[in-house]
Image (cartoon, rainbow, N blue to C red; front, side, top):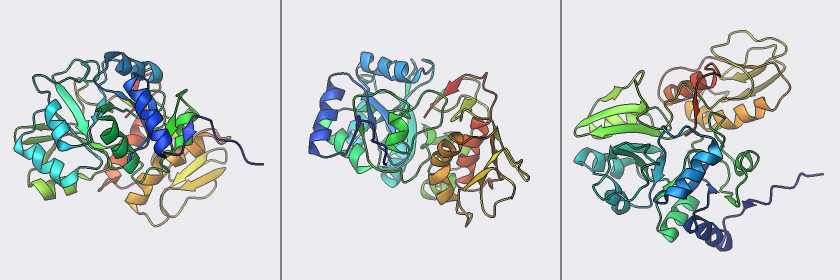
Length: 326
């Protein structure tokens, strides 16, 4: 006997897209697929709609949101685009790269979305459903990950519907990237990594010829995804495991260590792209198992491994820290 899907999950046909568009224009929130993770989308220029995003997620209001746009022209209405930002946008948009840029003088995006900062985190998603809705609605969309703040990010429509009460979740299938976007601050000719993500720093440096500075421990929140405890399962997470107990679940990478109660493998071939795509879905699955905690094998700190390890360290952080998502 199969379990019925929540009624909020909809195939993104013309009828569902029209319904989602109407809901957004009326100030409601919806679940939206992107290539990174599913987003909790709302009209970024509507203060009440943005406030609903924070309320749905129970998200700290000092933590800014990423705003999604459908075109470079739309982005130029919201933020200043220096030549280096143009180069990055032309190379990697649409795709898993968020740029933090100065707001334009007349930027209509709610100040709540940027936590009162004079900068805005902005990106152009690659998922065809997200792009269609952005183009048909004409809106720019605030869309953090569609999960309660601090919990594991969603990579399927079912992950969203099981955690949030939304009128509609457009089902675009499993996310291709499965990891949040890389966030860069662009200040003139300077690039600073604010959050590693689905685009490797090596690719960015190869295109723009500019070294990316790494912001190790920010003194204040300047972009989404910088709070310490984040992306967290309900069970404790233990990193760099080389042994595992009989009551633990194992998140493996490569050849699994033996002895776990249950095991899922991010990539048996040690492919970091495959591991990134599997990360959140497998954390969701293991968190639903009967076990004392989740042991995670070592992930190399190269390429997308940097972003994977960033998420894992935040998932394993003490739970008394303030949490965030996307």
